[in-house]
Length: 176
Image (cartoon, rainbow, N blue to C red; front, side, top):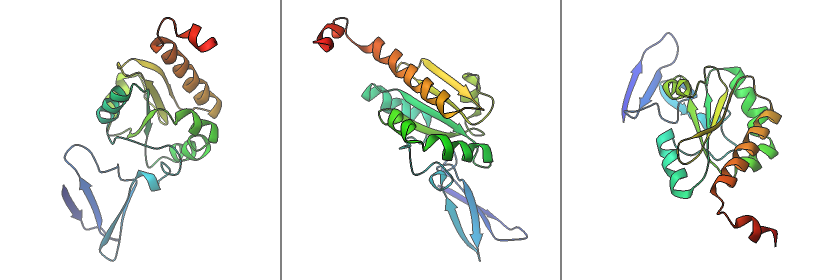
């Protein structure tokens, strides 16, 4: 892990990189009398709710493939109030937490992961995509997103994925 510091008019600002992407990505980096403090995404609105896994999409997708689960990919910008607001109002909603409980969830920094977002035609944040283990994007939305729109997308993706993965005779066995 590399670390670099630069002097500013105020406190020392320290950036930590792991070679591929910023660590967790940093939501706030500040220094107090020369001591650097890194506040990860969990302290910038991504915590206290959805269990985020990753830290990258390939890692989350590998887990989803192993467990045959959907992947909920959330794109955010740590410096935008709209993202923090969405996380507080929508992503921490009990119904949303319930719907995402059985998914592999990964929060990505939009600036860092822009190529992936653009591949899925997501150009504004907050944004999300729901991806099947085979890589098919089942649903995607970008700002503005309401709680009800997110819930409808989660339920639609789950029902489509569930129907596609049930054995042919499963309906008969479930209805008994």
